[in-house]
Length: 421
RNA sequence: GCGGCUAUUGUAUAACGGUUAUUACGUCGGUUUGUGGUACCGAAAAUUCGGGUUCGAUUCCCGGUAGCCGCCCCA
Image (cartoon, rainbow, N blue to C red; front, top):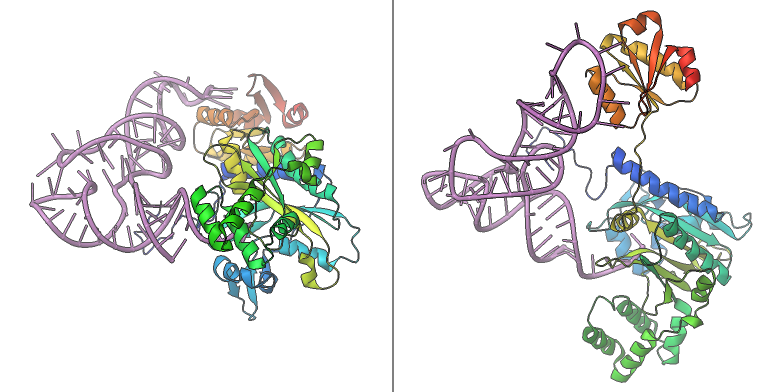
């Protein structure tokens, strides 16, 4: 809520389109990141990272088509040294840059992953914010089809590791090369036309059939040709796609060839894929990626082929919530020290410090509440042990350590109690 | 950039053109001075901002702001 009545007070709201992560949000975030990292590493991927700042040229170099995107949908500014800087909107150009820089010394293929935060300057809506985190997994240096299969299998495994099953999502695969050939077979070679058709096919499911056909006719000029294209797109020849076949061989069944699948970026050159939530009303794609064999050539030298995907935390969260797969624990210390009065707070801190030396997490409740309330709070926070310090304990140096799970109390000096822990 | 919807305590909500604006959760305090998550009692806490209509507006109208949803675009 914004209390903007103030000329004097700052708003407590976060900046437009970005999120604060309170402990309960952070617990979820942590759970997602941990599962991502664990899964990627189980496939032998190594983690990398880079700065959120990149020279704007990195994105402009991809061609004029992206100009609108860079000018209007990124955070771009001039630094104090007159350099044009952009907050990275995606990770692929960055990792391509890093790979290109070391292409002489890396032993390909390399498998790399990262969980960067990315920025886009656009109107926020469901599943799309101005800052989000995205798991990026890429394999560089191999054009072998098994590598395409591997990357998709990794993405699939993430869902499995979150407890999902195949009925909850679906994998769509397509290939830019074969699409190009298929258009050629129909006598369509004009790149602009193909681009138009690709875009149209991408939103095929969102518009009704007559609109779809009408736009098709408009792009092609012929009704017959439009019908042929439509037929080609709807053709289900999954057996002809080696990636789909390979995934089936790995036991992954919720995958199909979808010739209407387009993906937005022009840099994809071969396999493209997308994961979709099968839950009703959730038509947005969960993750997407593809093969980009020419991207590193921007940096000169021989191009290193790559394939990878990006998976955003916002869509991941939506998916887990939709399918009730979210499980998180807020961290709490093992021991809570409860001074009965503020005069014993420092004494509590000393004990806490001693307990920490043996690797047990511990905090002191320095609130002004009564001991009963402090105990309740500790129990509610799932703390395992409580240790009360009052006048007697402070005098004698002997405390009783209470196990909040079974109610058992152990009495003794700090050395004895630490042993117990 | 365009369109639709919404705005009530910390959060989630109820209600009404007219007395003290509902309820729940959370927070804080209490239930014989130092021992449990439950229970019981109590407290603090709200009508987004600016105009208009009206005897009277939180309610109706206009505008601002913010949020949500969608379009565009998609990383």
